[in-house]
Amino acid sequence: MQKIANRSLSGNPNVIAVKTKREESIGLLQKLEYCVVASWKDSSGGEEDLEKLGQFWAKSWDLKGNLGLAKLEKERALLEFENLEEARRVVSSGNRVMGGIQVGVEHWSPRSGCWAEEEERKEVWVKIVGLPISLWSPEILKRVGDECAGFITADEQTKTMSELQWARILVKSRGEFRPSVLEFEVEEEVYAVSLWWEYRSVLRRNRRQEAGHQSSEVRGEGASRAEAASDEGAGVCEAQDTEPVR
Image (tube, rainbow, N blue to C red; front, side):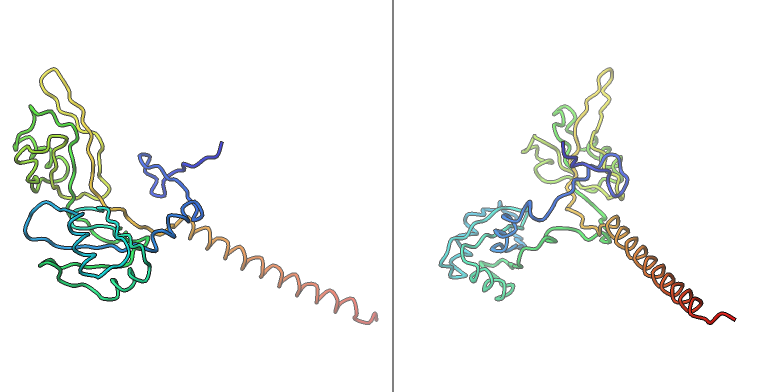
């Protein structure tokens, strides 16, 4: 059986590392060449209607081919163009105001939506999944946030209890501190619920691979020096062999 999971580069036992090869996703990568990432800021505060936005954008850009949309996160979507040239034309036209909304566009890349390793994350949203309704109070949510490094606020759906699948709170970030289980002790009972941290993907350099590459270079230099020394030694021996005997 092929082993796919390895020890994390960070050494964190709670992280699973999976090695992948480019050819495993070559078909998807070819499809993503037709994709553009759109981001916008809507101050109206209304619900996002991607289908309506897509129809409006397609008309504004005068597209001849079809346009597919998929939500990436709030105010951010992946646009799939049927025609590659139209995708390039839209990106080259730059950011613009459309329907009173500032829309930014860029070609998709493997770095799209990722944080760079050095970027500092000061706050993060976390979902408390399956929070018992009996524990759904501002005081308890604040205490949970403080345990997570510092409560900042709760989102509107959590405040109004209009979404009961989870409670969503904004807390201060504390490095790699991301517990996955939250326990509530209520007298003689304990509720265990899951925590979902809304961190973006973090793009790091593969230091293990870099170390291996540098090690190979050092070994290569060592081998070259050894060969050079061997050649020099051979030269000396030949000179000694040809020296006339007295």
